[in-house]
Image 1 (tube, protein in one colour):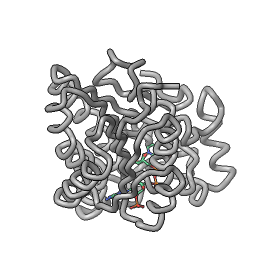
Image 2 (image 1 turned 180 degrees about the vertical axis):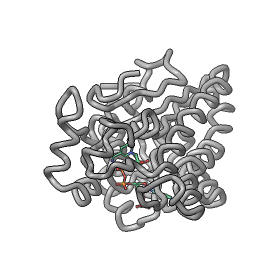
Image 3 (image 1 turned 135 degrees about the vertical axis):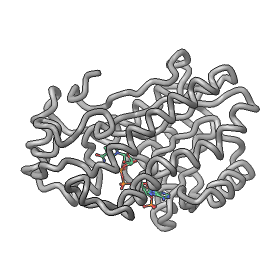
Image 4 (image 1 turned 30 degrees about the vertical axis):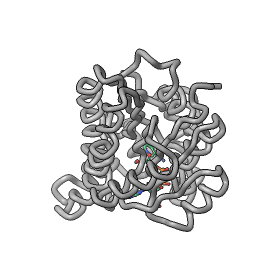
Length: 261
Ligand SMILES: NC(=O)c1ccc[n+]([C@@H]2O[C@H](COP(=O)([O-])OP(=O)(O)OC[C@H]3O[C@@H](n4cnc5c(N)ncnc54)[C@H](OP(=O)(O)O)[C@@H]3O)[C@@H](O)[C@H]2O)c1
């Protein structure tokens, strides 16, 4: 679909499973040379083998580890033309804001916002020097609208507290970080855009969301279904391609019409 992606080096953090793995497959199908980053070496190996890419184990909350991953990718594949900073982690239980522990807050902010910052910090200078690059970051509908509002998704999930506040704040932060980088690096030929998916069916959501809850959440979307990892991957391809050459600083809601801003 996008011949210009043929031969491009695409780095996907969080590429060992879920949305990241689907995105890695989509870039590989376009002929990109793909490196997937995650912590689970076995899962990385499976994805890398399937797509004929490279699996690079690294914890993206650790700057030295990401730097080492970048050096290895540059040596094995060449410099990144596309960076999908999709890894997201951290542990916090849903509940009232004041009940969230400091440890939970830091774990989720670290696992999403700080991880994205460290990933961009590592790959951005090379892209600026080369005067080319497309960066795509990963927010969430939870960073667009409060999930604890009536109709905000929390109640449909059987949880009136919605997503943990740290997750909403971290994912909103990813949007701001992306806009800042877009403004800073545009003159260097580097674009930065952000994806904000609603609930996407992945192994994890299949495991943790019973069928009836999936159906209730799906019914809250104008397009009356949950997202698929491929919906997100398609948007990532477009934002990496020359077809989006004049788009930067954008947050794209991939949410079946649930979020219209
Ligand atoms: N699924 C949804 O409904 C949904 C909706 C909106 C946004 N999102 C966002 O989309 C992204 C992917 O979600 P998903 O549902 O596909 O999640 P997932 O299946 O849980 O996958 C998370 C990915 O992130 C990686 N990761 C997490 N922490 C990491 C760390 N510290 N270092 C390196 N890799 C790390 C994991 O790698 P390892 O397991 O190998 O460590 C895994 O590849 C996340 O940022 C998530 O917040 C998901």
